[in-house]
Length: 474
Ligand code: NAD
Image 1 (tube, helix red, strand yellow):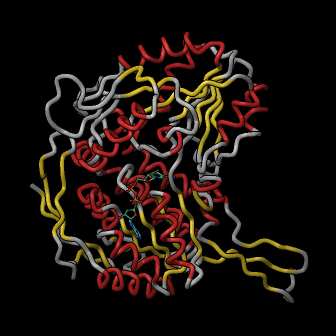
Image 2 (cartoon, rainbow, N blue to C red):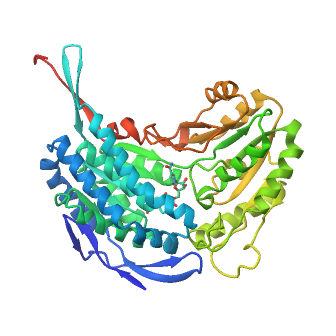
Image 3 (cartoon, helix red, strand yellow):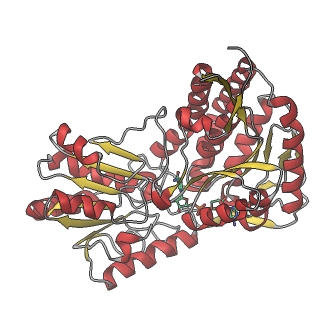
């Protein structure tokens, strides 16, 4: 049983002013495995004040100094890979292969930010003016539970590379993972106040950060509904905001695709991170002419997808993170059935032979129309919908008929045809015949999937403001 009773402010582990204790669970057993004492608004204000003090000096550090800090952060997180791996499985329930990826991802995002910084020119010319890219100030970084260390490290590395200081508000459900990351960051000897970490509730700590006048920038990953709240909260002080929100991504299978490849790819894209992924390809668009063939193969693929013990290497889908998420997934499966979708695999309840924990059955619906609730709302669990289309025009129309626009997938035997289709999709990323990630490329959403971009140069510039200086010689 872990008792986490420290937050991190001004380079030191301190007891929070907040007095609420919050239970931490193992989602595979639904047992309480720890308790965390939550920060409150007062703690958030202390953290913001420390970050503001530190900004005066840190914003003027050289590129070399920042690169050295990022390197130390990378090494310190890397040194804790095994502890982080265990915490991810225990507290979040990621299957082992996913947990290993998440650990590596947390260090690689720091490295990627360093690479961008190394090559970035903070000064350029525009006509007679010198344009200087200047750090924005104190950055509030608010992160969800579905990739805790990766989001903390990625946002923090970009902010620090730009010369901003940070106040981080991770999800309260990820306190064990956050403790390990915090200890690593402390060991990296970053100047006091540059990094502050205040685990607390969104409505208190998150709200304080998103309204406080001394916070210049908010970078948020989470749900669309909270993203809108943050945007409204930040309007009063005109905060710069980057919002990475939800998705309902289309997986468009073209009629020339080889289904032996397309079906496993589609199911993998849908079930990644146990379905708790904003980029999951949850709407599978299939040509009507080949529907029976696709459904048959996809049904077998989903029925053969192992859901269960995250420590079993054969497991693909682990438990949902919380009872609330479990109930949410059950509700959507019920709605799918009630609205007339055909259940091809899975369904309500736990997988066979599992009596406890927040496990759900990997579920596939056929005969879904794009106006059904399960095709419109983000479920955030392993529940996929197959939607038929007659021709390419209808495929494009269905793919774009959504409030979201984070990611899309196209599978085809003809790369030129797939490329032409990609140009017509309203999404921040389109992946053709691949699930590979490109860290140098911008990541973010069209429409209600967000505002702004992370990753690569775009991600760095999200923490910078251009300033033009005129009347000085080149
Ligand atoms: P959430 O929006 O409930 O919470 C995210 C974070 O915001 C948490 O730290 C939470 O405490 C905080 N928060 C809650 N209310 C707040 C408020 N009023 N003010 C400030 N902060 C507040 O999301 P979640 O349930 O933790 O995560 C799941 C959601 O995140 C999904 O909808 C998913 O699509 C989205 N997500 C998006 C991406 C992306 O990159 N686009 C990645 C992962 C998850």
